[in-house]
Length: 269
Image 1 (cartoon, rainbow, N blue to C red):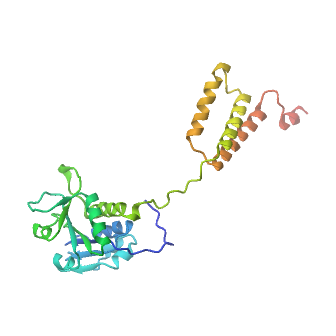
Image 2: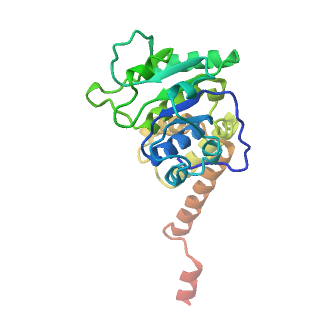
């Protein structure tokens, strides 16, 4: 989905931190940054990234999510990465033998929003590409977040998991209450204009011989009117349709049998 508007200023609102534990591929870090940027998250923290930081592959994969990449912080341990946070959720697709509350993305997001709304810091902890989080890392979290994935194929790419949680966080917040360009449709035309379209169309259909059987004309007219009434046409759309009808009508008049044209008159001379 393309559509970045570079004329708009970015607003860094309070939001959950995203903590990646020992990410192996720079591309995964970059696509995570891009997913975060899509939904207004900006605090990305890396715990002991395999290929160090900064990482050119991560920067390339971020696709100009520079405001996230520029703010990346690197920590040696998970404990250091979450030290300033008072609510941390660990994400995992596997059952763990740890006594922790388990939330889906919707409830987790609601809890994050409520906590951040009181001024607290919150974060989402994501594991390694190959084996996720260790139990000792999950034990540091307040709760587990998991997704309703297919049990036989539960593994998600890190950026995919971040994207889902970032989307759900924004959807549950006030920021997700309206779509970015909703409400852009022109208002529906007044009924008077729609009735004008009906009259214009039906008159043309009569003149061009569309209604072959007179006793079926009322039913056909009702069906045609129902089609256009359902469409919720705007005034501009009605004007366009009437222009099309007029163009077809004029062409029919020119081609009507027995009607001579300028070319016919020149030929006869």
